[in-house]
Image 1 (cartoon, helix red, strand yellow):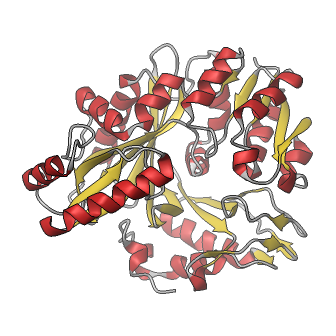
Image 2: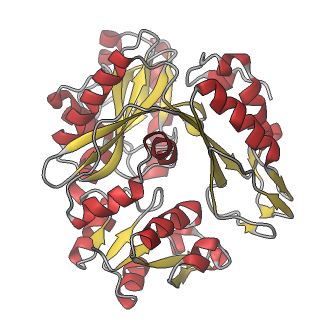
Amino acid sequence: MFKKILIANRGEIALRVIRTCKEMGIKTVAVYSTADKDSLHVRFADEAVCIGPPPSSESYLQIPKIIAAAEITNADAIHPGYGFLSENAKFSRVCQEHNIKFIGALPEQIEGMGDKATAKATMIKAGVPCIPGSEGILKDIKEAMKIAKKIKYPVILKATAGGGGKGMRVVWKEEDLENAWSSARQEAGAAFGNDGMYMEKFIEEPRHIEIQIAGDQYGNACHMSERDCSIQRRHQKLVEETPSPFMTPALRKKMGEAAIKATKAVNYEGVGTVEFLVDKNRNFYFMEMNTRIQVEHTITEEVINFDLIKEQIKIAWGDKISGKNYEPQMHSIQCRINAEDPENGFRPSPGKIETYHEPGGHGLRLDTHVYASYVIPPYYDSMISKLIVVAQTREEAITKMQRALDEYIIEGVKTTIPFHQKLMKDEKFRAGDFTTKFLEDFEF
């Protein structure tokens, strides 16, 4: 097994990886920017290396600095967490070149799934249901118009290198297509350095349901059931749960089989997620594959009693997958607690935490790196913790989450706790009656 793992990340995910490494008897190295010198991941790692000033572009995204930190500490593997360099094919390749194991997907797998047009073509070939649309990157506006006419409006334009909703436009009628095409390309070029666009039929009233998968280097693959991530704002998830209240045993079987087909189609190595859009008639369509651990891996762990970070590390070492196809026996919900002001358009609220009290009790998990007097820096993602509950039923899980949110006290900065408190009381949410558009009509 690996002797020492460097975690190329920060915050709660870095601490999460450190904990599993300690339980496996593996030494850890934290890297940090000067803004994160007081973070818990720095304190609890066996070694810590400062890799630069606060901006991510000068620290957490600096491949040479991270490789140098791994070499001077004799780390034999790097865990990228999520975000930052976790789905960066170049980083995975540079690790290979330096004989450091990248605990994640191989470069060619990241490239194949990172480009959405290529990923879609691969899935169609593998027999995974895909949304009707262009077969690859659109050549020009004329081709876009031709395809839109064929698949019928509404359609959605997407940047092939996209993420976080950038370079994406929904078009409801033909006369709006040209303007949407120009603005989407301009936004994509500025955000990703790539203005390539593709088109899909726009799925109305969709659910965002993903399947957790694992694959090893011997061609074995399994799925670990689904997560419903439909509660999102501007394509950013706020609440996730498993099992999905929309799921049926027949749909789970079909989606699980499709996810395994997707995994095997790219000979995927590691843990990852196959994401689907599911329409109101329970037809499902491939959306994308995340070649990394996800923020919401926690709820899957809770309902199947399985450490996904440990599985990641073992697969990277060369072990066969120890997982199997699972069906959840419990219900788990995760609320992302962000340093944002929900009463003012979820505006970021960095600053010093003056008072901090964590909730406790049976069936509750809190993944966080913050504490009283911790200063939340303004340079990174605003998530400060993940509050997770597990119970026998969905109703019990919601009630438990309400109790936990009431106990969770954070003063000094604004947080999304009041938003989550209101959501847990909402009749439609409690009835499981929601889509990805739910928060558009949610009054706060």
